[in-house]
Amino acid sequence: MNRRVINNLPPIGTLERFIQNRGGNCNQFYVGIAKDPESRLKDGHGVYNDDEFIYIDVENNAAARMIEKYFLDRGCDGGPSGGDEQTKTVYIYLKNPDTDP
Image: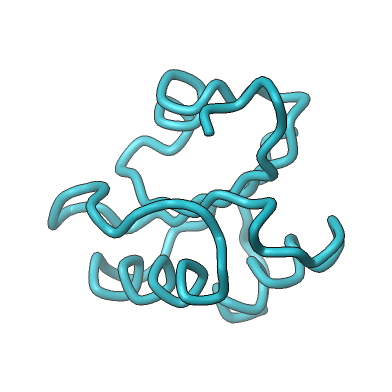
C-alpha cells in the first residue's frame, strides 16, 4: 500500500510508528533515501503496492541522511550511500522473500 505521509508527527516518529505497528523489529526493515521513492522501491527493491512500505519527504538532504542513519543505527538494513545532494525523501519497507533485500 502506498503510504506517502503528511501528518503532524516529526518524521522519525512517523517512521518509528510504522515499524512499531508491524512488529517493531528494525532488522526486518530496510531504510533508504531516494529522489524518486516509488521507482526506487519498485525497480530497485521489488517492493509493490501490496507490500508494507512508507516514504516521507523531509526538509532537506541533511535531514534525510540523519534520519536514514538513525534507523541504520537502530538495526534496519540499508546503507548510507544512496541518493545525491538533492535527495530528501526517506523510505522504509518491511523485507519479505520477494524484496531485494
